[in-house]
Image (cartoon, rainbow, N blue to C red; front, side):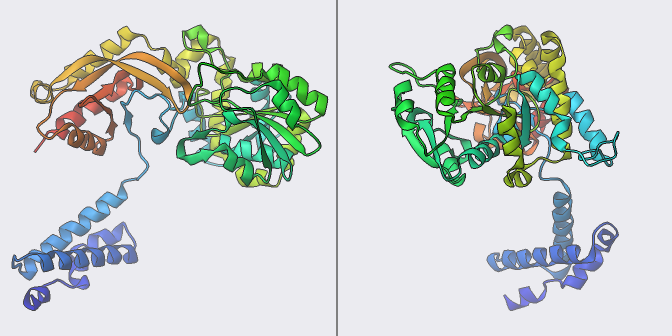
Length: 462
């Protein structure tokens, strides 16, 4: 073994073989990768009975160093094809941005911008002013604030209005959503104290009336966006809670979560609470996400009564939770689309476009994909067009399933799980159901079909 180990090339020897890499990468980085490869080769030699000569080890070390650096040159965060049928897939980045938002991002990212600068007066401005009027117009609000996500928005509202005081909330609304986000934990983190009222399935106005008092900082309503309680239930309307909040002079906060700015029923989709309707009912502050049904970048939007919004914006946490220029650029461009007629909005906003795509279009898309796949690949994978069910995802429209069409992979010599993994390596993410891999066409665009076809061919290559 000592003789074998003595054949191991040195760092300098390997470095000479890859010295061309030093033209593109700094010396320390390349040396560290060389050392890692040599160490891995040592471990490999120790575990193998095969006797390798120094020249063979040198060639292998050079190959591994080049491959290592090539792989690390590829970005970790990259575009993928969402063929899961889940439109707002949190793991895949939720809402794809509309073209207008992508163009706005490019313009702002390529140079400086007037993020906090008033071009007319030359004085310092506020970044929220780029979107506040658009939010207020769409939501019927007096003022607005923007932070980095809806959880931050809820935390900021509670910290501002109820720190050191009680927050009254129904037991049935103490939700937990993805990533272990729990409402009781957010309330505790804000410095407020949780005051539960009612039961899991039934809460009445009298429950709230008995709970509010001198120590109450806010009444909090949470929209249970990722589940539905049905059967023997009762909840208090926003209008009745707003009347109570005015009588006791306690702000009413609504964590809407998804945030719908338009009536979804006009496109045949199930109804969701609209931001404007919530404020019309008397809610003082409402928070919602920018990257769900709204269709923009990740952001938490707070809208409502001017006095309360101003207090939120003056909270020291606001600076820690604020968004950067890229988010504001994408959010502004997305919100401007809501000035369009409904039919144009549904066409320009990818989220709504996917939700409203007709079955005949999905079938044509699936047939087009099948036509791009070589016959031998199609036969080997048993590809066929099947019926499917898509979902909005990310807590939006929790009980709604949308009829869809998918290309199903019925069989594979490597197994469905292995094939799904190979496709993911090519950037194509599907879903496994009933021992089949489904590529749902509702979340795939026509420009991605060639990508998928190439990935399918590559996935069964030796």
